[in-house]
Image 1: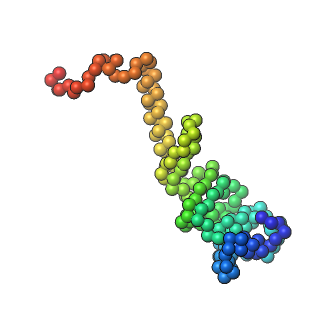
Image 2: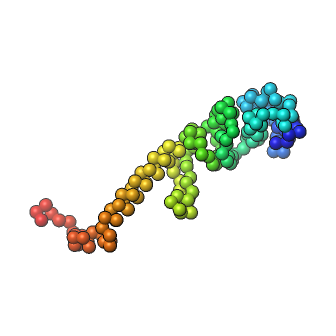
Image 3: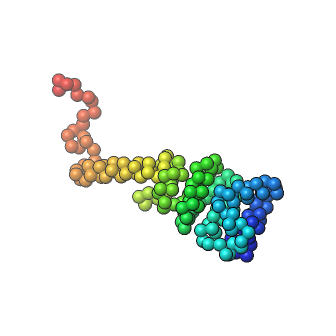
Length: 178
C-alpha cells in the first residue's frame, strides 16, 4: 500500500497495472468499494486509514483484476468481522484456483475443498485429503488409530515376522471338518 495515495488513486493504479480499461476499472472499483465498505475512506490517504481499513483496501486491490489464482497466507489474521465475512463470501463464489495457508480452522471449513498436508510424520511428501478441514482431521485421526493398532500388534510379538512362524503354514483353506 502507498500511504501517500488516496484509496481511489491506489485502486485505479492497481487496475491500470493489470491492464483494465477505464470503464471496466470504474465498474469493478465501484463494486469493490461497496462490497468492502470503503466509501467512508475512498478519498482519504491510505496512511490515515486504520489497520482494518488497510486490510480491506489490500483485499479490494487483490480482487480488482478478477484473478484466476489466489495465494493467501494467513488471510484472516487481523481482519475485523465485516472484512472476514466479505473475504469468505468472495472465496466461496471464487471459481479460480485458491491456495490458502491458514491456522483458522473455521475459515478453512467454510472455504476449502481439499487439504494438502505437507510433511506428515516427518516425511517430505504432500498428501491430498478431499474435503474440508474437519474431514481432514477425522481422516487423519483414523489413520493414526490404524497405525497405532498395527504398531501395538507388532510390539506384542517381538521377533516374529509373519503368522507362519506362530502356528505353522496354513496357506490352504481348512474345511469345517478339520
